[in-house]
Figure 1 (tube, helix red, strand yellow):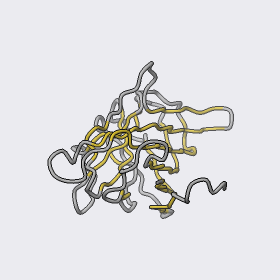
Figure 2 (cartoon, helix red, strand yellow):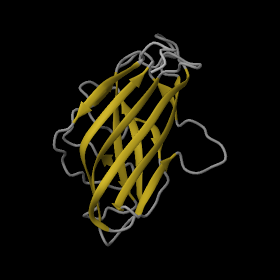
Figure 3 (spheres, one colour):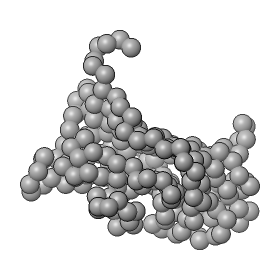
Figure 4 (tube, helix red, strand yellow):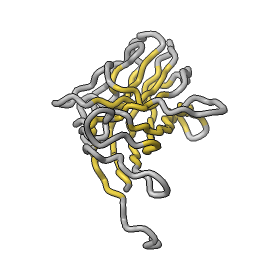
Length: 202
């Protein structure tokens, strides 16, 4: 560590309890963190921009099962503010991957990574407090073997990028919900999370 900047990284959340098998649905899908404590983002966390911008790194992993009858898969990350924390399809979409059809597998490792950072801050309180713009890039991997696998990247491929989330509430406690939706509600396509961490920076 160079010491150029003061230490600005902290582990906000870590959970290694046994997960519950998720049962994804068609759009908007369902949370893949069933049975896990909600992932909190403290009120007022996103406040710094420039070359020391506020950012989050959500990581996790578990097991994926893809049936022989394979619909398209799509991962997304949602945010809610309701207390107590509850997953809701009426939350705020932070980022999403393109639709892809994975290779059938009876069970293999799944790895998840989401990077979030503040691009444009909203006001701290009062009218307009839900106007922070958050950049979100991610990579979700289904890894059936060393030589095979599939990446679901966020955002989808394109020549330009426009943040999905422009209404992050600057002064409220928020919760993050990794989500999976299927092109068709086909039984047996599941993700079971086994661990998850959230790092906060600056």
